[in-house]
Image 1 (cartoon, rainbow, N blue to C red):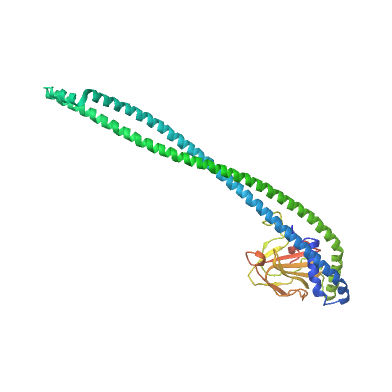
Image 2 (cartoon, rainbow, N blue to C red):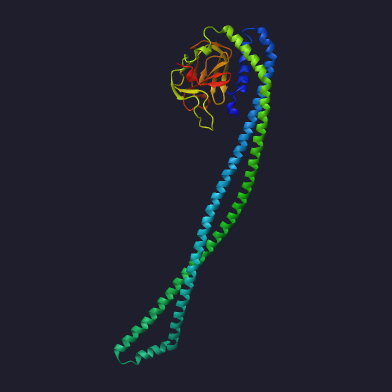
Length: 388
């Protein structure tokens, strides 16, 4: 809403009428202007108060909007983190299940090896070491003795292999149990972390609800404030018209030659440069459209007045940087924005083609250029229809 105020309707006229008339107080028709001086002072106070309230409203609304944005992002991050934790939790459950299965298989294999070893040991115990010696010594046939030695060696090696397998199973079992303990602790910590994240999410949703409500309240307050300001505008409209009549009368006395209206299609552009933005094209933000044109050129290039008139504004304005506005009478205004410098002052009379500013990139413009616009009774006109 604020972005549209400078060049839309009564607020625009109020702002520049109040600024433009003070230099005129010293120029002509002193008595008539003095009669309006008190009204002008009151008007300026009202305008300043309205603008301050609107700026405060806009600032507060932006803060509420930023709070809601932060909460929304926080909720998104928490939900994303919870999804990651759910995935890790599922992975841990799978790993634990695999470890438990391997542990069961290892225990089964270990028990089988232990049974084999027990049988081997029982057999060895029953036969005894002396029986083994006697059995060999009583044999007369060397071939039989050799076979028996091989057999007993096989039994011994078999027991050794069984013992080694048992030791391997025991080591594996120890590793598996350690892995199970580690995964169990990790899973427990993860569950606690999830619980904490869900609590944070619940609080974030509450914050979101509060932020949304605060934003709605602020928007509702803005609507009420807009209605009040519109009522104030209506009360001030009659004064605006009187002020414009005074300005036009003074300009009529100083103006010579053809009226601005008769120059439609005959004006020269303020600077010879490429047109990079045309009237009515959509702006990058929202559904707003350009109410003027933008000419791209060299930094510091001379900017010329398209027609004679009085300077009613020469100062910085949000969105337009250093802005120059010339009143050509009959409710026609020409606007020159993004200037590097302004070479005239409020109240100055300028001639057609006079150098009034230099091209710049003030107001946040990324490249050197000129914003050029024409207004009739505050309504935007297509500048290209006025130039040849």
